[in-house]
Amino acid sequence: MAKLIGLASTKGGVGKTTIALNLAAVLVHRGAKVVVIDADPAGHAAAVAEMGALPYTVTPLLLEEVEASAVAAWSKAVRAADADFVVLDAPGALGAAFGAVIAIADLVLVPVGASMLDVRGAAETVGIVRRHRKAGGRGRPDILVVPSRVDRRTGAGRDVVGTLAGLTEPVAPPITLRAVVADSLSGGEVVPADSPSAIEFGALADAVRTRLETM
Image (cartoon, rainbow, N blue to C red):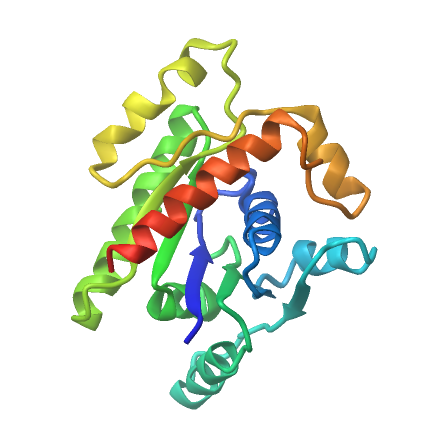
């Protein structure tokens, strides 16, 4: 059965889709079968995939109805994916799809920048995931906070890992703010395999697999 990895944040601009696409690429390059589900009406992941250069499939699968039957059908479609890992790119706004991604995920990645507003957004997202976990009574999803778009030239960027420890959830290795990350997605590609950013996404993949293996 596929492991379900959700990307969720109530704050925009933290690199959620970027992390989803590059994490999926690392998993594929390591021999896993991966499907990315774009559940965000903005459709950014699907738009990148349309350029035809990603090494996996991105499937748009929106959920805009709150009725139990619609949520159940959506969840069934996600679980039916023929893959080792399903990476779910949740919408940024609270709604049916945001909640559904959290409800079915084995692991939720919470991308967060170094600013005060980013950290507040991460705290809000973590709180929502914890409430879903408590309500579900199944001990899942696990949470992994991902420092994203980190500018190490700033004090906040250098201290972000320590700052995020205050959320009392595991913190992944940071993803540094680099032009190559944005430039690659603009061309429909993930970061080059020999780039420093690829090393960072590889370290994130290691952290993800470690969390999943402890469940």
